[in-house]
Amino acid sequence: MFVKPHDKLVEVLRLQVLESRLIYNHPQMETVINDLRIKLAEVRGEEQLDYPLGFLNNQEYLILHNLRIQDENGFFQIDTLVIYRSYLLILEAKNWYGTLLFDKEGNVIRIGDDGKEEGFPNPIVQVKMQEYRLRKWLHNIGFSDLPIHYFVVISFSSTILKSISPDENIPSNIIHSNKLYLKIRELNQVNEQSLYVHDQLLKLSNILIQAHSPSTANVLLKYKISRDDIQTGVKCPCCQTNIMIRSKQKWHCRLCNYFSKDAHVKALLEYKLLFGNRINIREAGEFLQVESRHTVKRLLQSAGCQNSGGKKGAYYLLDKINETTK
Picture 1: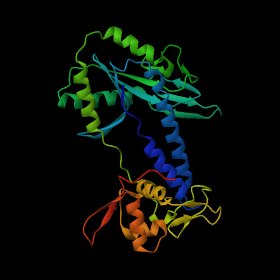
Picture 2: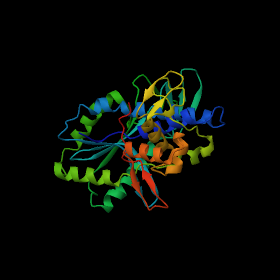
Picture 3: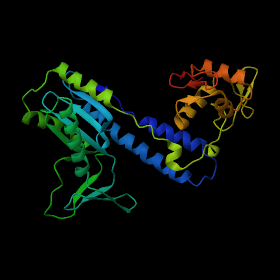
Picture 4: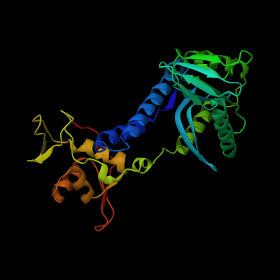
């Protein structure tokens, strides 16, 4: 049973909005586009695991994606955690393609289809650290007796795995995604004793979900981008290239002559991804390019934004904004 879905899509959406609203020829544009490409590949790679995991019995397995948990050393992240009555299984997804060469220390050289080489650190070290931190964290909440196993899962079955030295084998914990289901079956054969009943496992999964802390990194701060570098305005949902104007209680695109009642909702969602969950009347007016404070207030209310704060410091919360853009 998938009890916690993927949530890296938020990071993808944030980068997509940043790319679409960053001013033309900004020096960070190339970096943003490259990071978006990498993040999209990560999402596709992690989603490749859903197919073999879908063959597991929904009544016996609990599956949590993209956990980010705080401990005494900060935060540690797990791509996918499988909870079973006899063990926990950490899955670290790698969307590597081409040919992977493993040296005797487990470090990786990837040779792409274009022949270029790229180096990566030993993935086993990374997942072992996740296992160590998760084990300590579980001990602190009273779940210290569940064995923890792990696999580094290469998302694409077409990726070729090789050892640089003929005397060294590729670690058995590094597998292709199409072998994942069978590997889990093998784990079951060597971990036959049931340590917890299903209700206890549900309790553990709920604790993990409650402990999950999504990243709230400021994307503008990360790329050292000023608010002035962000294009404002309500973009036309039809032609996608023009800023609409507010006229007679509707949004109008002068380029393609498209009209919309609620095109501002998508703009407010984009504001939320870039600047956070709060917005005041002045900020909303500047971003929507609407001068009338009364109109701005009405647009925020129609979008489902909740008013908060006092009269002087009043602001609107964007967490319950309507997502029914037409």
